[in-house]
Length: 397
Ligand code: GLY
Image 1 (cartoon, rainbow, N blue to C red):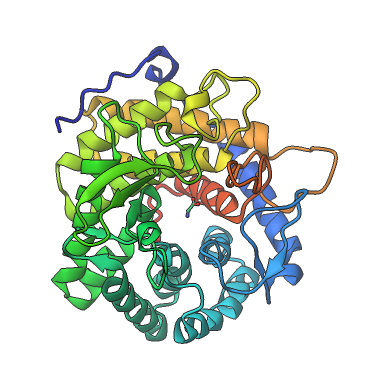
Image 2: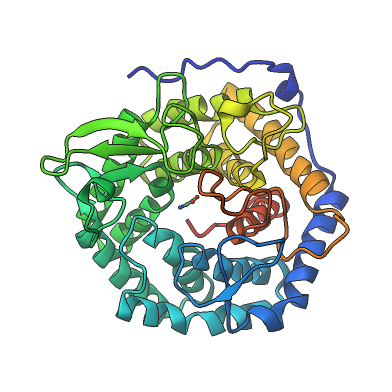
């Protein structure tokens, strides 16, 4: 399919260079760090479960896809501040990742990268300790062998699952897991991991990204042949709509894949999915939970989709030369979107909330975490702040 032909609507919103003031960024970061430090006793031996209930995070063990981002928050906070208390929490979490892998606790789906990239790869990048590198490589090898369908060219939604129809799908979310295989391929020299990550991106481009730059959340493949069948959704409003967080995984996942592969098609593809997202943004720059509701005043927002998209645009800007027209658009749009989250999702709401940001919607069709906080929203918000404060920050993905 020809890519790179989605026009930016209301371009005047993003054409003029825009910056968040240094003071505002530093204050937002300090506020986030203060809150994380204050809550250390609650989380040093625990994990926050996915999304808040009445703005409180339930406590649990390391058995969800979001756990990696809870540990990643502390690695990020440590890198941002140099405060060893944050590093201590991350290091206290780390043995649970070995245990989780040894017992294969909830590691039978596409989201294994979410668990091990911001925890284990981050730990290795920061400490240089071989045990973290080895663990990440062991898990990546398992992920490749258990999860990758060579004949289909995609990572399965899950395996060990009785319902093979549910298993034999791939998803937008998986784009943020594919970097696990890129990283492991480079570290180990195993080209098959890299080929799998490349295929995951190509398959997503081919079947999940529509002509207008929007995305299906899931794509169904035939159980026997792994041939493509049809697009559908899980967390979106309908099969033909565009779930905003799923789409955000593309706004961030494609630039990461470009960083590893330098495959040119990813540049135009990324511009299309990002312009689609920008065209759907409301006047306050906080995405609705599904882009089908652009223009609605009633539908909940998903600030996590905003934070992830900010990280994605900033990541792509690293790879674009100054004469690529979308670079200036991404710089100004990402600043406006991050500022909107600071202004509208971190203030006083008259009660305590556990997260760093609110107005996150986890899974509306399932009735879960609607207009609440979520640990991955916190993580990508802090990562977005990090990317603005320290543009040379190397990243974990
Ligand atoms: N599995 C990733 C998400 O729900 O966004």
